[in-house]
Amino acid sequence: MNTEPLTLALWQTPYAATPAEALQGLDDEAAQARAQGAQLLVCPEMGLTGYAIGAERVQALAEPADGALAQAVAGTAQRHGIAVVYGYPEHHPQGKPFNAVQVIGPDGARLMNYRKTHLYGGLDHAQFSAGDTAPQVFEWRGWRLGLLICYDVEFPETVRLLALQGVDAVLVPTANMAAFDEVQNLLVPARACENRVFVAYANACGHEPGMHYGGLSTVAGPEGGVLSRAGRDGELLFATLTREALDGARRSSPWSARRPDLYGPLAV
Ligand SMILES: [NH3+]CCCCC(=O)O
Image (tube, rainbow, N blue to C red; front, side, top):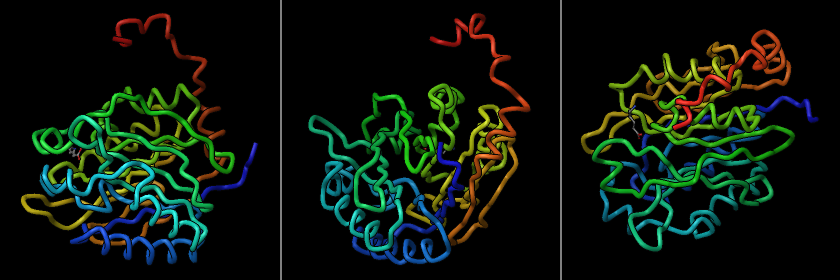
């Protein structure tokens, strides 16, 4: 097993006015993140297009997982030698686009695509179709990684599903409003602690029409400690994940103590 640490960078940023501006910003941040030792860069939910942009614009900007947006991100990943986790509207052949995130490796390969399964309020439901595929684990550089998007992480079942698949770190692009700081302050550390995993929550900041994003991007360790937390404004946040931290947390609270024989009702 690869025991090399994994250094993440989380790009906390206001939304750009256009995808072209967002892609340029991503390229600049990827260069900075790599120069400061990060191997993987996590961006906010719908980071390439904006989040509260209305159903028509979401539809107009939606692309397949291997479309022009993915090709541009692959170029950035290869140019700077860094994996990129980014949010975008994914084309749906029969309906509203999906609110999706995709991981592209430093060689430009597409590693995982995930569609937000828990839509939040009127805005999400007006703009997107819910994903119907449960989050899955993928392996990269010997680390077992999983993806969630914003509201997904507020349901304990989603991180537990990934933990039962052996995930080491859950990467969560998000667009959490300033009124919901409890997610960064309470839920993200709790999800990490109760599942003995790392959770990296990369939020937007600034404003969109009718929206104020709270920033406070957070990386929580497998015993619930906050490894790194951003402020309210734009910044590049770093955290290094180690196998020792995972192994130590899992020794101190072994999952062998679980009683799935008693949990039946929770499975519905
Ligand atoms: N914490 C509630 C806000 C969730 C916003 C979103 O899922 O984009």
